[in-house]
Length: 321
Image 1 (tube, rainbow, N blue to C red):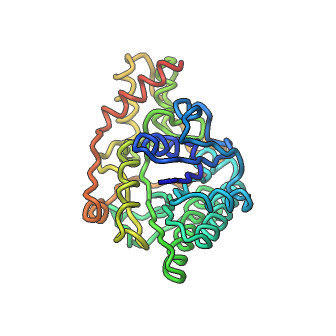
Image 2 (cartoon, helix red, strand yellow):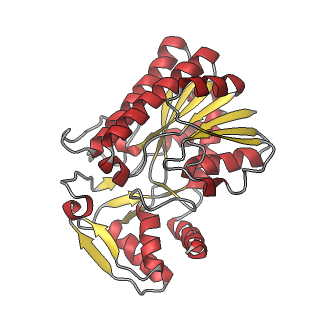
């Protein structure tokens, strides 16, 4: 199989590329390296079944050439990370919406099956936990730029499902819930690498808000496995699937666990959202996926618990530091 991965030098994209290459497939990664990194592709750049194309996913000419040559498309390219979304809302909206418009249109032209990466952010401020794929979304005010990301990914989903309904394009929508693991950068606001990097340097772990917010973290290898299973499942087309873990942890508990696992030298530092982001910020207290649909479709169960994930991240960050 010849696979195109947009955002292929990113955190999730590079792990997916690894998995596809190890399974014997050919992979082309399209990435502008704005948030992706060549370091993520260290083991692939010299491989004869791997190609990296450095360009913007909004460049329709490049996308046209690459989609024509592939069998399937994994559309992962997007603005990612709360910090980046807060700092660059225009980039977020343009990349997420226009990039998906380009990829979807070209995939439809050549009738290529496509996986569209979405996010748990589309559930917004809903308190109807655990989140089910057909639940209503509850978004905050437009004055909070973080909701531009949720809206842009929701529009991506609408567009993907519309292409399926109107043109019969094979589209699978995957909503990722806090995917984590080695290679993830902390600079764009991802909490686990940010905590781990600071803990290894003996610096205070900065907890935004009260620290009572709870999240479920899924290992990127488990997520990549689920994505490939969904793409092999004909019944998944035209449907939305949560992909994540149901193991909840609060941000303060996460900080305590990382401090303990890295040697216990760091302290906890609580910051208001305004101190952290330089402006008012809207957040949600819990984000837990219901996995019934993906379990029924492809038998997915997350295999890697939080402790094992943290061991892998700490080992990688320690070696790089």
